[in-house]
Length: 127
Image (cartoon, rainbow, N blue to C red; front, side, top):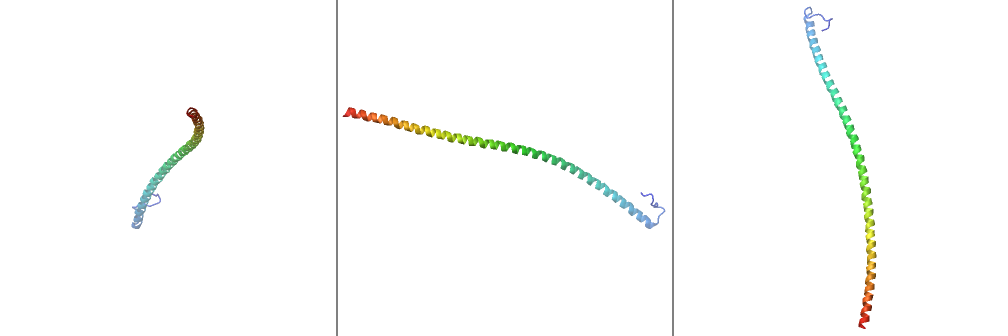
């Protein structure tokens, strides 16, 4: 209580009512101050949690960037391997085609020689 205020006993009735109302208001203000303190404490805790979560999110973002970089590297390497394999397959297919063509030419030459030999044999024995 304020020391400047007269006591309730030596006051007029109107002043006593005002003093009671003032006491109630002071009690309400104390209650509001207490609630405000609780709200401020909660806000401080929320801010701490938010800071903690922001740091965790930043850590996750960094990890995601690292994984993204590694995935890109793997994808590029895979694309290079696929292209190299495709080029090697194309080269191999070309080699087999060339070998097949040479084989057909040789087979044609052998058949021609055998056919000519057979015709010469048949003409020499039959005639």
